[in-house]
Length: 315
Ligand SMILES: [Ca+2]
Ligand SMILES: [Ca+2]
Image (cartoon, rainbow, N blue to C red; front, top):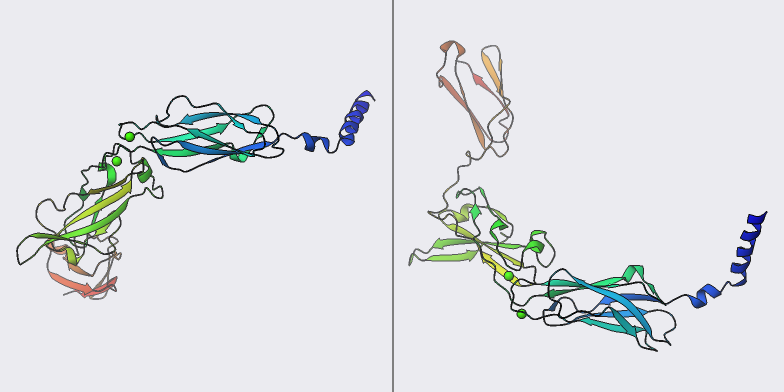
């Protein structure tokens, strides 16, 4: 009986003041970032907003953190909404140093305090601060592969060295990711000098050498934006380092023939095998078991993609 009475009493209190909690609800404070990125030496700016009655001034607690080392002095730990204002500006000074590769991200987080609530969906905001002391990317970038037509050659970005970092490019972050352009080098008959021209649509890290590259060389340009926001560009070494690209052998890069099965018949043999991807044709050689070795008693050949099955006359 006693518990029920207490519950009833609470219910009465809430029922008697249906609008009270609304009228006294504290304002909600949120924060958004200003311009981002900025360059070191420029302030990182933020705007705070509050809901509700703005008649009185309001002090809000916050904290400033960064993932680099560009902050100038000790940042403030609170900001004041002036009486009558629903917004308040906040800025964090940054240092213009002479150090290469020291970009940062400055984050301002609202903290709990008296007389307000923090908007959980806008409790923190970040501004990227780019360093302005860039060191250009260096290589060496090497092209790997065989210098023959109809084979794939690849450039690896493992050789990219940039003091400002290339982690964003490595992760493929939009605006930072690697961009490739392949070139072919060739000698002009007239003067024997090397000339270079862009290869159309050759814009991936791997490129399949084609007939146009025969007796020539290739090179690839890699562009990206480093972690501090600097546009970077580096050329690979020319490939091959010595000599030129030669005619590829269509047979050479293919897999071995597997699944060979021979079925003796009446005066004939039937041979079958697993089709090899990309094969233009097959050459079949056989030997007699009774001969105890020695290839070349006879030969048969099939050309074309339909060469999956064939029969050779047994002489
Ligand atoms: Ca600087
Ligand atoms: Ca750089």
